[in-house]
Each structure stands twice: as C-alpha cells, then as structure tokens.
Image (cartoon, rainbow, N blue to C red; front, top):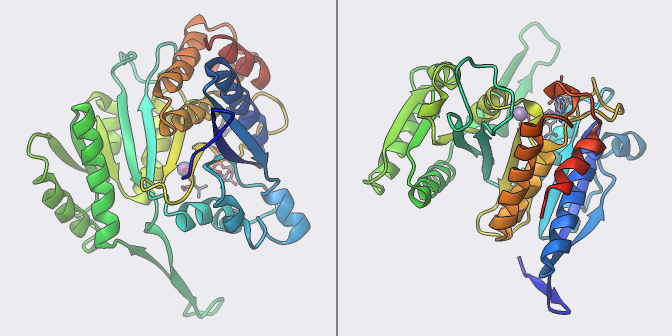
Length: 361
Ligand code: NAD
Ligand code: IPM
Ligand code: MN
C-alpha cells in the first residue's frame, strides 16, 4: 500500500463496513479507540470512509455492495468490518457477496486469530488462569473447504446430488504453513498443525505432507500435528500446549469459536484477514457475527472490535499502540466494574468503549 504523508503526518485510509446487527454498535467503539490513539501519537492519522453495505443495502438494492465495490475498496489501506448477516437475507448470499468476496478477491489468505486469556476474562475451564491460554491460530483464508467449488444437480428431484469440493492447492497450502513457521520463528514458539488425514484421504493427507515438508526448513522449531477432533478436546483439557496453530479454512473457523469460548467469549475474539504482500488491503474484524438476538439493545461487547483495531495498529507498524489497546481492555476486565452483560456486567456498549478509551494513554 502506498503510504501518504499530509503535512508530515502519516495518513491511513480506512474503509469502514460496519454491516449488520451489532456490527455498527461495536465498530463505533473501535473507531473511537483508533482516533484516540492517533490523536495521542500525532505522527499518524486515520481517514475513515463509511460504506453502508450489508443486508439492509441488499434489501434496497438487490446486492450486498455495488458492482464496483471491490474496485472502490482497493484504494484503501485497510478495511474495518463489523459483521454481516441478518434474518431475511440468506446467509450464503450475504456472506459470499460481501465478507467472503473481500477475503477472496483481495487474496487475504492469512487469517490471524489470537486466542489469549487475559487477566479478568471469564474462563469456563476449572483451574486455568491468564497465561495458560496464549496461542494464535493461523487459519487458511482463501481456499480449502471455502473455495466455493461444487454443484447442485437434479435440484428437487429424487436423484438430487450436492457436491461441495475442497480445494487445496500446493501454493495455497504451502504459503499458509510457511507463514505459521515464520511467525513461530520470530516469536520462538512451536507450531501445531490441525488436520484430519485419517478421514479426508486427499486434502488432509496432502496438508500433512506439506506440513512435514515445510517443517524441514525450520529444524529449530518444535512441531505437533493433531487430528481436529483430538485438538478440540485438547483446547478444553490442555490449552497450554498450543502456541502457533495452523489449520484449514473450515477447521480454523470452528476451532476459533471454541477458542473464543475458552478465553472470554465471542465478545473478545478478534481476527485479521491479511494479504501479507500488501498488494491489496487487509481487513480487520471481530470474529463474531451480527448477533441478531441482542442487536439494537446497545449491550454488545465492543472488546473484540477494539482488539481487531489493535491488530490493525500492529499491521501498520504501531505495535506499541496495539499493545496499549489490549492492556486497556485487560485493565477494564480486571476492575470488573464496567462490563457488558455477556461478561456478567450491566453496562452498555458505549460505556464499556468509553472506559477502555479512557485508559489508553
Ligand atoms: P454470532 O457470533 O452473531 O452470535 C453467537 C452468540 O454470541 C449470540 O448469542 C450472540 O448474542 C453472542 N455474541 C456474539 N458477539 C457478541 C458480542 N460482541 N457481545 C455479546 N455477545 C455476543 O453468531 P450466529 O448467531 O451464529 O450468527 C448470526 C449472524 O451473523 C448470521 O447471519 C451469521 O451468518 C453471521 N455471521 C457473520 C460473521 C461475520 O460477519 N464476520 C461471523 C459469524 C456469523
Ligand atoms: C468467521 C465467520 C465466517 C466464516 C462466516 C460468516 C462466513 O464465521 O469469520 O468466523 O466462516 O469465515
Ligand atoms: Mn466463524
């Protein structure tokens, strides 16, 4: 991405797609946090441009975003997304035409999902304390089970057949595994691959062989390889064993909701969709959905969207500020006075947002 300077201040253009349900409620708090940080720092600033795309837009215009939506977004340095999905619009349309389209078209093939139990965060596992859960899931984000390949034959007939084809290219598999190893190398951590070679006799056997192959280039790094069912069990029974985790698109989707559940809940789980080559904008979002059950009530937890804003700061090279956002979230949880109902509190989204922002300095 070309970085611009305006009057000596580094300028980052952010496309905001707040989306549906609680999306706009939580995104607003993240935007405020980013504004606070840039104001305090003074050497960089954010330009936010809001796009009203999502399910309401679909009901009015018959499409989730304009035909040239991707072209419009390509002019931005990053995308900040809330959530997509609303009752009344089929999920496979709303997600494929917006969120998944952006991930695919911008080749955001790395999905970074930190699973870290902070101090003060509720954990449903007995005896597990902050520090015991500290992993990052590197989810393949461009192909695999989400390739969108398949067919629907003889629709509605007796001999109806549906095919959903997983696509695992050598390039796609190798680059995500290599990304995980590079991260582990940088941080001095182990790499765990999660797959399912015993049942998925093409895709996951291939995955495992590429994992073994790539690991030879990193002789100093400890590796583990688990079947996804066993890995799910260990997430709960012994989460400490995981450091850098690499897995396929669908498995990564599922185990990161499980990861959220053991490290504070959906209200805390963030994800970054990264195009490492920076040829296209990357996208930052809480990993939760539009939560229609609580939308409009002003009680959604904004921690996840603020955490994803922190990932955006890291991505732009402001890691110190990124860490300060996480520290602020942690402080608010430790104090335990201003929390949304999912964390046992009675405060609103904006009250919690203001509390976090007040602690950033
Ligand atoms: P969801 O994540 O929206 O909600 C699951 C549960 O977690 C709900 O009980 C919800 O109230 C709770 N929850 C989620 N985020 C919360 C927050 N910030 N604070 C407090 N509680 C929170 O998942 P779902 O119900 O399976 O899906 C709802 C819609 O969202 C569907 O249309 C789905 O396709 C879509 N979806 C979108 C995304 C995305 O845009 N990234 C992700 C997942 C689901
Ligand atoms: C996520 C979401 C999406 C996914 C859905 C909404 C398509 O669940 O980001 O975790 O499966 O990737
Ligand atoms: Mn998910």
